[in-house]
Length: 147
Image 1 (tube, rainbow, N blue to C red):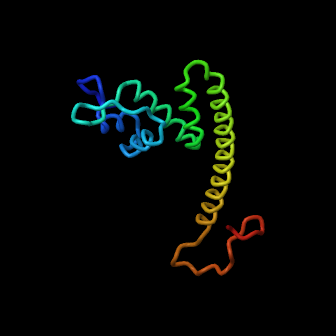
Image 2: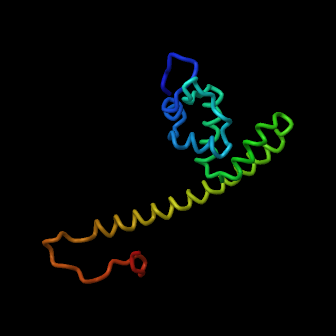
Image 3: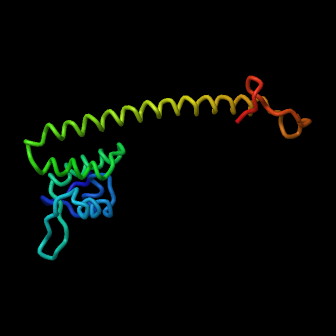
């Protein structure tokens, strides 16, 4: 995170601190995910530590593939205060389940990719050098063509 000598962050400092682009900050503000940002007398945005903490939450939700529609619903529940905590919990628990399912799917994908890497590596290692007589047979795995 960039360190500043003042209480507020500029858009560039905020983007750097939160790992998002300035365009993303503006988008979040436009979509109502981020409360209207304080401005200097000259109209420049200035972000607070609370703004930064909230953008980090939004980034986490987005990186974990929460749809913008659900992020908006979550943001609205946050604005409603403590009375909406049970609803926020429901959203987060449901989203966590989705993320865990996606992780399981990605782990299975890695296994398939690793199998293909091993198969292709074996074929490559068994392939004769370019100056050797060419082998006209197709490489196979368990009697099946390598795909």
